[in-house]
Image 1 (cartoon, rainbow, N blue to C red):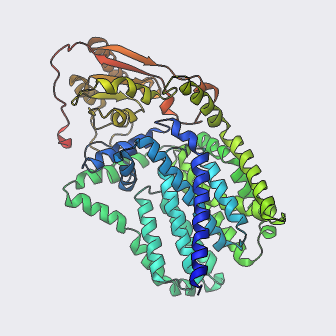
Image 2: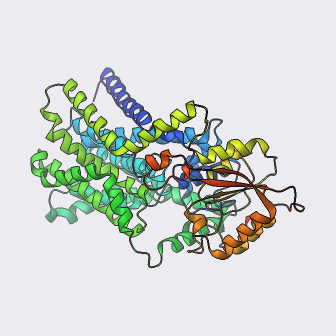
Image 3: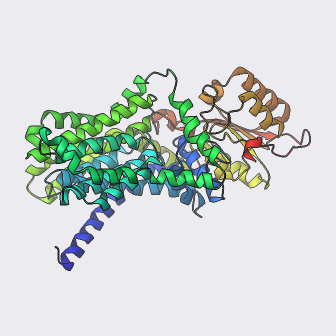
Length: 550
């Protein structure tokens, strides 16, 4: 037992370390504050969060297929009196800093790391590499990864104190993982790794594995029973409020359409995403090759094996998802950062004579790595900030520029129809949304039912929207418009010619070509055209929602 002064000193130390990681994360990720949209997914989170703050449960007014918890996370930011984009990006950076701190704590339980050499390296690595693969956005992976690492810390603390572990921390770990599932279901693969790691770290030998499993069955069952409770609570909420069908459509029907079919693994995007994290993958490989030299005991050897299993479990997750979206690969960051921290801490930092030498070396490594992986957004930010200081208030940010133009003109019942991947315009302007399919403005062309609500023929939905004559139409000049089915695009083009006039055309800032802010998805900088309804070509009909949305 620690004395009260010792406990207070330990708490102050931990708070200081956590605050240090948070400050570094907020500063390093500051370029994310420049844009209203980095990835279109985050726009839907904030838009759904805004609807939730208005009293509408997710999936009941607009469609999406992400879990309830992600929208609940976005709701405080969307409803705050501050700019929702700025506040959500700062919130994401704080969570990144806290996750880095949790990794530092985890490393001390996996390895003998009294000087925090491994943990500090791992935490800083996590922060730096959160800048790539879409990690600067308000992404689900940022939050479900935090849940996974927190659950791992709870489990490791429990088995560090006693075996079999106490029920309370295992239940807490199960609830934490359950919340992670309500943010994104991919955390199930983290859980698979943790279950395997539990036996890797605690079983005396393979011969006694069955007996060891029986001895620890009760706490593992407690964790398993706690795991589904957050999901069951959400299901009860929808059943109790009469919106059960909406929950089923978004969480079962949509995912059945999304994950089935003969879609092949997107190998090229997967390799691009891995290349963005190349230093971490090299660190993981070095840890595997030199594991005997880098570990000081059988316990540490087992810990390294567990981290390898964790990486493998996430590989299985990517094979299951098959899409290889860049932000999916953020899930690799915790185990790879810990392996990289092991290599740096044991291969370099432990041989330095003082904390000052360690600090200088870490600062140099962070600076070099930061410029190597984030040179483009850093240089991009320089050009954008220069133009904004020169008077172009929202240089490079198309949704902000559109909002600055249209918001002063909007009347309470005016609708804006956004075609493409810039639904941020809806919550930035506060305009009426003329369709439930706010994600792109249209139901899915290729996978009926994957939108999260009852599918409607795209041409039928387009005709319904245009018949209601939204006051403004914003068309992103990008892949969505280019690949729109001909009958749908022809209908849109004909109505734009007949009923609308071009109000403004927003071109892409040159910095997006010279120094791409994001290598994969950057919808906030896409060019767009804004059309305004002509002088009341005919009486404007009220918004005619599909019967399901009433």
